[in-house]
Image (cartoon, rainbow, N blue to C red; front, side, top):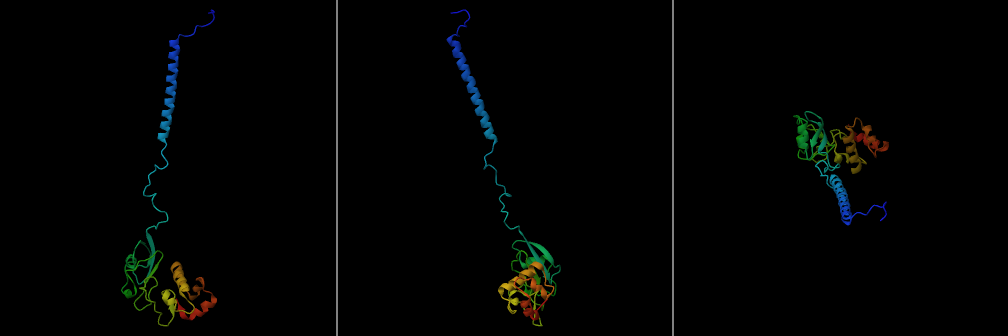
Length: 206
């Protein structure tokens, strides 16, 4: 053997080097596997977020409140917020109850109220209110004219050329905008023009 060449390691030493390299490689692989496992453990699955009560609420569900406008023979007329499934008697109680001259025979106290409704309690001897009527047609005042602010749909249909659709629009306009201040306010109701108004003018009042 030439003097400048290093003699090869003995076979046992090469074996020890190979085993050491394998162990080191195994440790590296194990470390990588453990690291990946930790990272996976930190990331929650997409379906792991619990569904809370707030998240389960349908945004389109009712808010649980009814806005009711109470007028007429009550102690404190005004706008009141009631719970769902409230009845006319609840609306009148919120308004402080009825006055001594209220015509309770014209009011269905057990009827369910709806959101945006106007409940009118008539005075004894006057026409029935549009919102709280028991279902019977409102009687016109003594001069034979229909009061636009108290007549219900059935009474409005007794007017010439006023059918169920127009009568319903008149009641809806009144509920959305309040009382008619003059007969000419009928022009704001969809479907009523100048010609139809002239035919109604002598038969209605406010």
